[in-house]
Image (cartoon, rainbow, N blue to C red; front, side):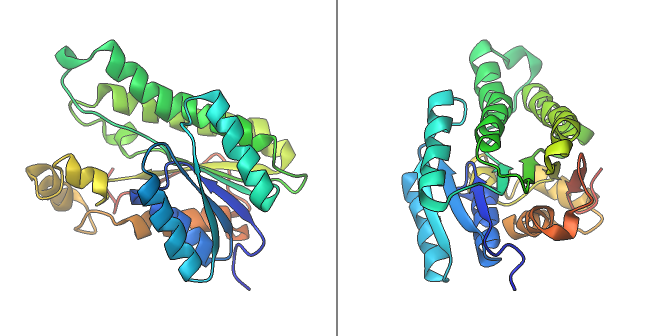
Length: 249
């Protein structure tokens, strides 16, 4: 039997990159998957089509996780299609690097609204639909909360907040049989890292030089960890932040 048979999973920001990889991997293990997206409908539809073509179940639901009304609709559509939620992956996130002199209010609020408020609102929405059997919440943090790269003050602050929230909620929700863990990826090759100019850059070369495993990550590398955290194989883990960066610390 597949590891996630009869489970329902919501993945925020799943139209591309790490989120898309997680959605496809959870579906491959038997979960019915909700592919959430903010604006990239074509990407989300493509992920759903691939899952369905491989025999899985999936729908795409638009919603900006930083807006409470969108989150309410996301979980209403999930319940309508598949019923109670068993797995929430808080993957939606944005980033922008820049020196301290370049920081402004708009950048601060954009990153914190999505990366931190969005995580909290999505978690609130999921809690209303978890059943008495509990489930698994997987937050996607970042290795930046450990390595603190230059020019990442806001982004690193948001991911430090994700670490803290993971620890708090693991204690708060444990009595309800809900486990809360975080995956903190290192550099991963995605559409986002390509468009930001990281792929092929000196930054990538430095990451590969310092990584004990000698390469940057791929979405599947993170997705495999997510499958583990979503499954009964990790039933004794909660409040953990798993560094998934090829050994970079």
